Length: 278
Image (cartoon, rainbow, N blue to C red; front, side):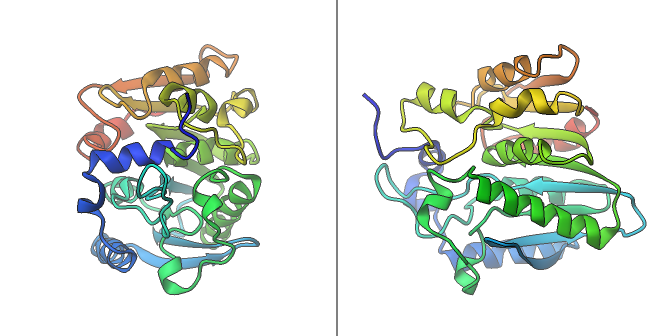
């Protein structure tokens, strides 16, 4: 029987020891802002039609290529039945990966309501935005507007999207709306939330779009989907099923990274993984 109030994000919380690893939202924001400054990133808040997005970037306006990292689902749940009041990530893996990316024109884009509630910038931040509607059309449109903001600011011509976990789904869904995505990479991506939630026997994301449904629309985009060999949250069969739905044998590739879990091992391997161009 399905647990009606349980989602994948809770399993991630379990991995870090439940409440023992949770800093308050202000601390989470300050820690990220301090790390971002250390790595040369500058903070921006992007006002889109529905949400205000938190973002940090290290820019080279003479570079025509823009690299955008999209964060995962963050702290969506506190327990099996209690939603978090603030979805800002405990471990912002997408930022950690962006910080070790040696390239220029690198942008870190948080999801709606992450790192904004504590600054009273959380417009339209109902709890469903980080639960049942985390991949809703309004969320996808907002991230797409955020990408437009950075593209216009840098005068970039092409874009590379990199998404972690639920951010992988966002990257896929946004790619289906754009004609300027040169490369697509996902890390432990939730590329078929319907299948993944059935696998974990948890309730469906009733208000969300499903990335796998737009797979045929992005078959023309070179793409690679990295999965951890020890990832019990997003097993490799999800990415493999997604690639099969591209309807093109050479369009996308699944790369299984041994000894890596959903959260651990990616930063240490990222330089090497970046060498694999889609």
